[in-house]
Amino acid sequence: MNAQMLNLIVSFVATIILGVIIIPILRKFNVGQVVRDDGPSQHLKKNGTPTMGGIIILAVIIVILGISSISYPILVLPLIAITGFGLVGFIDDYKKLVMNNTKGLSPMKKILGLMLTTAIFIILYINVFNLSTDVIIPFLNIPISLSLGTFIVFTTFILLAASNAVNLTDGLDGLATGVVAIIMTFFTVIAIQNGDTEMVILGFTTIGTCLAFLLFNSYPAKVFMGDTGSLALGGAVASIAIILKMPLYLAIVAIICILETISVILQVIYFKITKGKRLFKMAPLHHHFELSGIKENLIVNAFWIVTIAACLLAYYV
Image (cartoon, rainbow, N blue to C red; front, top):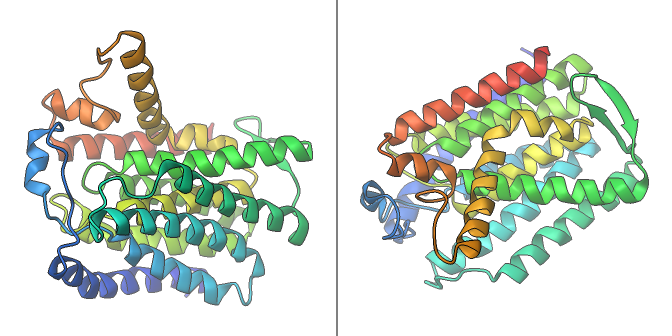
């Protein structure tokens, strides 16, 4: 058996075991979802569903990458992004769900935590691992070298945008989990072709964790990942794209996450310009489709299919 493939199996099994252990604990201590009453009415039945399940994802990825980084030090980079972003999400979830602070972590503290993690990632990337600032242009497959300043700004944007985009996508049962698994499969295939063992390990570990988590998170969800999981997975997606010199490919393979983010931005802008009118029935985009009468599982399946099609386009064209 391929040594890297073993990471997929181990992460899959470990996630199932932790899920069986942790989900009942979350339920026992009433660490449950609080559903907005202005959202889709069918979501009201999700009230009380165990949340913060992202600690399962976070724990498995941290342990496997931590052990693997002993032999493959560059794995420290995604480990920093995933752990840092996941920790910010955990604090936010903890304040909301355990301490009953409806505001959670303040926006300023949240962005500071994400920025600090991003800064550490970039410093290690440039000064410790001495990686290049090359970025591959999609379809042309031509690398261009960015100036140091441009690379820092661009990489900061990718890490922050990816983590928040996955966070916004996490609004339907299994949606973000499945989308991330598909995107990571695309990058893992590229890593295999490049002979990039480290990124294959990252990819397989994340895929295995996501697939196993889907057993609990797919419709009807028995657990939600919360910000703990969504921010951490965003860090995984951004890390593998940056290290493979393919962050621009996220514009294609992460099209669903991008559309979800754009829908929120447009909703806010339109609301302010029109003084109270809405462009969408509700944002992010998946809620608009729900309120338009489309069933949740159909939306999730459609978004997965679009992501698969986008990944095939990025790979073959």
